[in-house]
Image 1 (tube, one colour):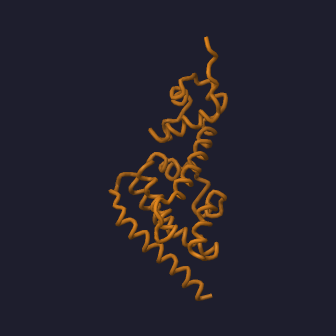
Image 2: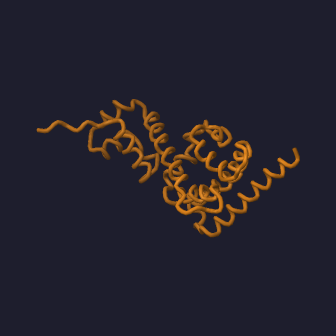
Image 3: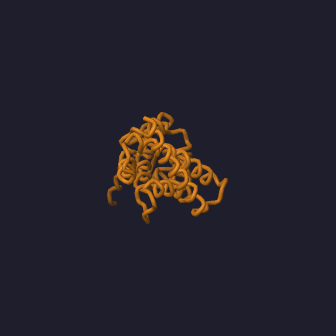
Amino acid sequence: MPPKAKVTREMIINAGFELVREQGIEAVNARTISQKLGCSTQPVMYHFAKMEDLKKAIYAKLDQYHTDYLMNIPRPQKGVMLGIGLNYIRFAIEEPNFFRFLFQSGFASGNSLLEMIDSDELEPVLSAMQKALGLSMEQTKEVFLTISMFAHGYASIIANNALAYDEALVAAHLERAYRGAILAVAAVEETK
C-alpha cells in the first residue's frame, strides 16, 4: 500500500480559499476542509489548531488575490483609478463570496479604510495612481479615498444582488467622481 499523501499547510489554505469562493466563509471548518482534501481532520487541526488562524491565512491569500485582480487592468481607461474602480466592482460581481469575506464579514474589523490607506498592501495601487495623476502621495490618497468609497458602495449593492450591473453607467459615475475628486484636491491646493 502506497504511503498517504502529506497534507501541507498550503493545501489546506488553498482548499479553504476554494470553499470561500464556492460557499462563503461560513462553510470553512476542519470537517469541510478535510472533506475537500479527502483526508481526516487531523492534518487540518495539526496545521491550524484554531479555525481563526486558518481564516486569517485564507484572508491573507485572498487579499493578495484581490490586489492582483485590481491591478490587472485589461484595457487602459482614461485614468488608472477608473480601471481599478471598475475592477473592484467586477470583483464583487465575479467573486461575491470573496468580496463579502474581505469587506463585509467584519473579519478585518481592525482595518478601516482610513487605516488601510497607509498599509503596505495598498502601496502598489497608490503608486500606480500617483504616477498616472502626477500628484503628491497625500493628494493621491485623497482621490483614492473618494473613489474607493464610491466604488465600494456600488460593489456592495451589486454583490448583495440589489442592483444589476450596467458597466457603462457605473463607468460614467466613477469617472465623474474621479474627476470631481481631482478637482477638489486641486482646489484645496490653490487655497494654500
